[in-house]
Length: 235
Image (cartoon, rainbow, N blue to C red):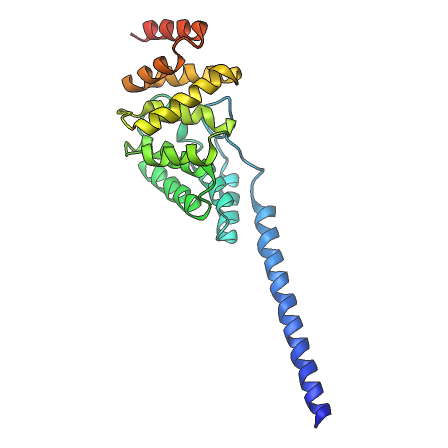
C-alpha cells in the first residue's frame, strides 16, 4: 500500500514539474517572441519635431504584432503608438489639424493603452498630448503627466515644447511653470537644444510666444534678440 502511495506521489510530482516546465517555456516564448518581432528600438529624436521618421508598413505591422503578443507590456504599446503617430506629429509644428482624424484616433487609443499599462513612460503621455493638440482637444492634463514622469528626458524636449506652446490658451499656472523651467534649463545647461526653443516660438500660439519671451528674459540676450527678429519676420 505504501509503495502504491509512493508511486502515486512520484507521478503527481512529475506531472507538477512538467506543468511548471511548460509554464516556464510559455513565459519564455511570451518574452522572447515580441523582442524578435519588434522593429529596431524607437526613440524620440532630440533634433526633430517628429518623434521618429515615417515608419514603413512592415515596421507598423511588426510593432502591432509585438504589442499584441506581449499584451501587458506598456513599452511595446508605446513603441506601437510612436510608429502609428510618426506621420502625424509633424503637423504640430505647422499647427495643422491631423490629415486623417481616424488615424489620429487609432494612434491615440494605442498611446492611451500604453499610458495605462506603463504610467511611468513619459513618451506615452507626450504622444497623447501631441495627438490631442492635433485633434484640437484639451491637452494640458496629459502634457503635465509627461513632465511628471520624464522631466529630465532630453529626447522629449523638442516635441514637448512644440506641444506646450501650440496650445491656444496656456492658462494652467502649473503647466506654465513646468514649461518655463524647461526653457530656462535649456538656456543655462543644455544650449544644444536652443533651436528647439526657436522652433517652438515660430509655431507657438500668442500665449505660447509670451511664455517663451518671459522665460528667456535676460538669461540669454543673443537668443532673445533672435526671438525678437523671428517675431518681426513672422508679422
